Image (tube, rainbow, N blue to C red):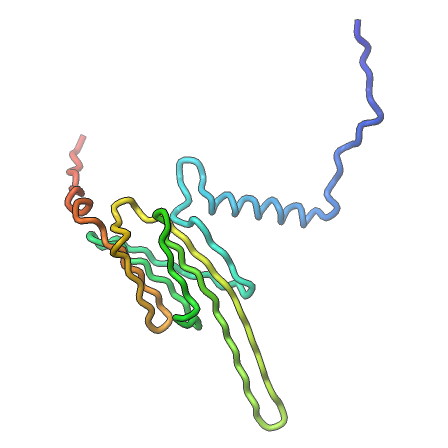
Amino acid sequence: MAKDVTRTDQVPARRPVDLFDAMRTDLDRVFQRFERGWPGFGSFGLANRDWGDDGMAASLDVRDEGDKLVIEADLPGVEEKDVAVTLSGGVLSIKGERRNEREEKKGDYHLAERSFGRFERSLRLPDAIDEGRVEAKFDKGVLRVTAPKRPEAVKAERRIEIKKS
């Protein structure tokens, strides 16, 4: 018959030094999991979102206009030369940096402010997109990416009638 032995050399589980830090870490994991995607739900089109030092993130609007997808990113305060758009393996990525400098001299004071922030957004495009015809235009702080669908993909789509039970 075996004796019940309690070991005293085992180290008991430690309590986190900072309870709020542990909670913050757990919440970060939840949000990271949301961005990667939940089983059965996908990532909601958000393959990557990188918040800059100043909290800047590119807001995206994605519209299906039948023969093409249109992606618009609002990039206030960003110049065209500071934006890069790439397409690789069906993933469209928009990267950039906002540089904001302000200097004001009046009377007996001098104000100089500088803020910088990087951002990155990526999303997977559908297989129906003709990657060779994707175009990007930048106008007044709005980046517009047009991703035409392949002609055979547009023709292959048909509306299915919903019948009453």
